[in-house]
Length: 101
Image 1 (cartoon, rainbow, N blue to C red):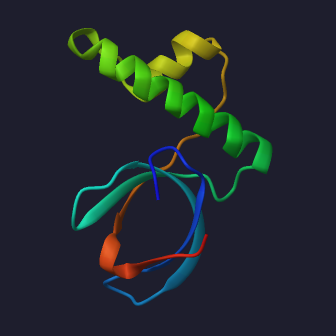
Image 2: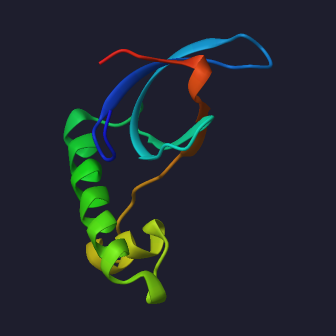
């Protein structure tokens, strides 16, 4: 699994045991957690658009680390103030996450 690649996962919540299938864009994968954008509720086209935009953001981040915008601010600057992405940042415990594809 690589950064910015749309990925299907099955996640088991540690405290409740609840199992959900999610579609995510991984953004940071340190052990034991994985940070990702949860794009489950979005259309495939919007998922792809966000994955591409996040890949562009990653390139931007690497070249502009000193004067960095957050991803949300960057979207506003690159997509316009009226961009209506409703982002859901999540953290997934890797040992509770099964990669489905």
